Image (tube, rainbow, N blue to C red; front, side, top):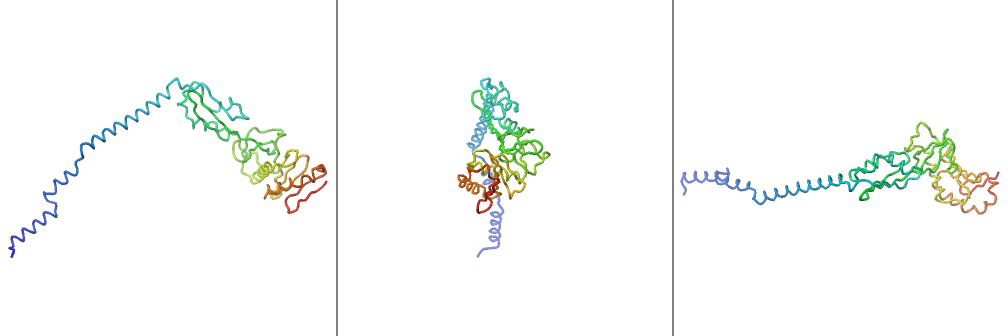
Length: 278
């Protein structure tokens, strides 16, 4: 049977194990040591990263200062109402500058500030050409509001403002168009304008059989949209199902083409086509 001293001794040994006595300290010190090869690996990795960084910087610096890449030509494509010289004048780029020192996005933003430019694409062509491709807004109609304001297919107002109408473009009439609200290069918010442009788009898609062009669009009431086509025939369409309605006009054209000068209007808003004679 164990004595008191032996039991007390056993309990003391248990306490040393739980409390993490002197025998546990060496294990903690060993776990904190980093293998020597890991230190060397980190050192070499740092050297490689710094070397690559300085190497890339050196290459960029060389490209931006080398006379080999001096701009000798600035090629402008896509300009229609603007000349290449006018497009170039919108930018701060000049011949002789380093091709790689030019900030392409900055040049693009400079060009796209022009009201008549929809989008610009800038790229480098080695060794010394800066290529500029512009997509200009094209007028599809003119709004009569004292003067004549040109608009593209999406309702953006584009220069110039005309004192006299352009004979090649249809006139949009009876719009809620204000000269004070019209801003060059900006979209003009107007339901009537949007519906009138949608009608012109449908006319373009269907390709009407009339030999003459569309002279004007009346958008005073969007539910009673109409357009005047040479030789003076008004076509009433309303604002819904435009392409289908215009397709019907193609079907009956052969029957009425011999008497167009006697027709006052053709109404496509109803199930049966109505032809009103003068």
